Image 1: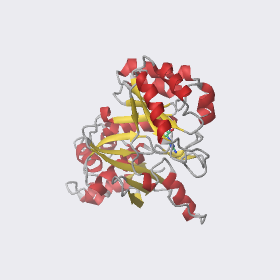
Image 2: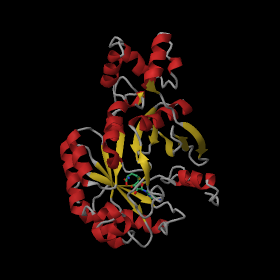
Image 3: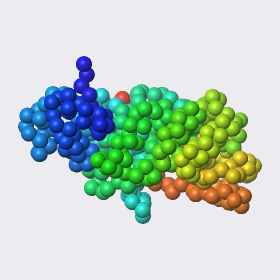
Image 4: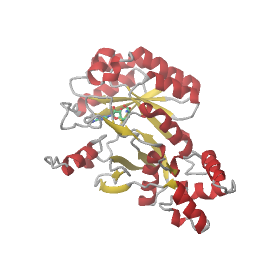
Length: 353
Ligand code: SAH
């Protein structure tokens, strides 16, 4: 039987497993603290445990730590993009951003993605596999250890669709907010979805005070279907109903992400339709001027068009922010760094910037 990755075990599960190994329940607190607070990389570090217990743990479990294979630091804003190699050799990317209110990590939830959004680099090679909860946690643990900065905020907005990996996502959220671990408030966590309606509804039932971000990207089904294959499975009316339900059940205001793609969804007509669509919804729009990906024929609108789009929404009473471009010089867009890394290591032509 394959050994369990010890960082996939929640506190009660760890306690149970240690009891089965003949240990007292209080040992769980020590071991969990080593793993999820002191961010130990090896059982040998657990100095307040007997050598015999450390050996027993090493025999019963694996403790895996992703290895940073590349770090890029933005000269513009200090944003850091990390490429991590997982135990099975897959690589994933995570981003660290510093804001005035603290520091935030954007994590991946899958290796690759199967959603096929037209402008996105993460999905170009399809889905490789789901990440485990431990692999999601570790992106934060390693970055906190490497930067020496306490992470206060998390956005699940990297590669992958979090609701396509629901169980691991939930396990991750419970463990990262556990007071016996890093204890990051669920209120400081945002989960972004392309609009998988059953996932949104199920998530609403969990009653966690997490912010939900919906990748909207269009004010009607016709335009949305051009950009996002998932829109063929769930019409906008169903997606927005699920969002309303999320607000009602959790009291959390929503974020509507809208990546502006020149000539596709950036027209004043679309801005007006978007304002009408979102009237009365509890949330705000986050405009993201699209990050052009070389394999994708998606261009960014000019500044004037972006401003015009924003003003139309504001005049209609919709709250709008324009996403600050963090790490533009270090391939900040989803999946770009991983992709250029894969291309380099497989001998393909290297693409800069
Ligand atoms: N699968 C989730 C989370 C991943 S991406 C989702 O779809 O929400 C986080 C956000 O970045 C999404 O809104 C996604 O549509 C957007 N995005 C991806 N690639 C982009 C690009 N090249 N330019 C602008 N936005 C992009």
